[in-house]
Length: 316
Image (cartoon, rainbow, N blue to C red; front, side, top):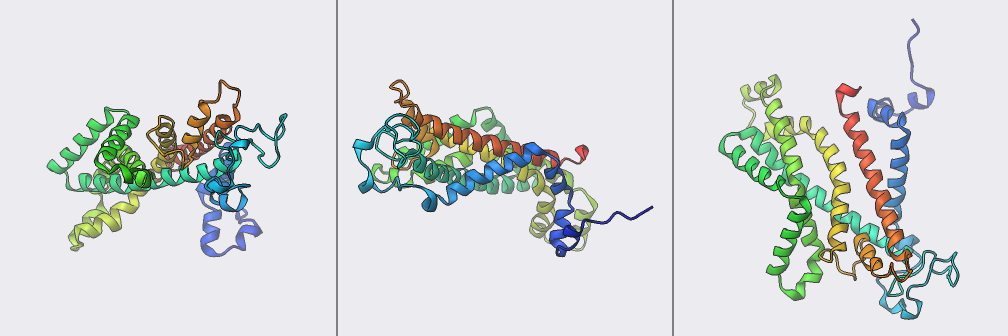
């Protein structure tokens, strides 16, 4: 039987790149057209947000360039439209396209920061609960169970409200984004903690962990060096899915008026501002940010679903 060899383009790659190109993960990615399209959409949205200072037609933070005479101008292809503002302007005369680019950047910053913080907290507590067991495990899991009985948006609203009442009024606008990140992170750590705890309880009784204990490896080194790499796969899947949820939570809080202020136009803030002008016919102020938000969340969710299936050995 003839030996199956890699294509010349892959065979010419260096060792690590070649192993990645021949991996099951990349193979399943190429075999899923929906995932490829979702990745392309997510890349375009994220790249546009990161490059906002370079590609945005205007700077929405430059108050000197704003004029109320340009407020609520329609998109350029409609009557009375102006190609200086391709997607029209909002109630303050800001270019909608530019505010979407900067707003997406802000929404992504809040979502990514909140997911990283919740991941660090959840993974740490999950490892401690799964490794130590006993009353520590009981306390952590009972707190998680209580928090799971409430919707995450209510937890975020509660934490955000408590933080705002404890902070000086003058400093609230300056640290609103940090309060919002903390509120969202404390709402989603439970998913990471429960998953990591379950995986840790399975892994801690395996032979390689017992061997490490026998030769005298310290528990902290066993947890970080041996357990953590073997439980990180599901964490990446949950993190990807929670990223979309965190972005949506930020948009919901901003839409309700308890998130980012109008001076920091996230996607949720733009939709809330535009919602006040829908009945007057100025639909573009909220519709275009809503479309971008929907595309971003849908693409990230699809990538999360693909990662979940790719890391599931039963589906291979």
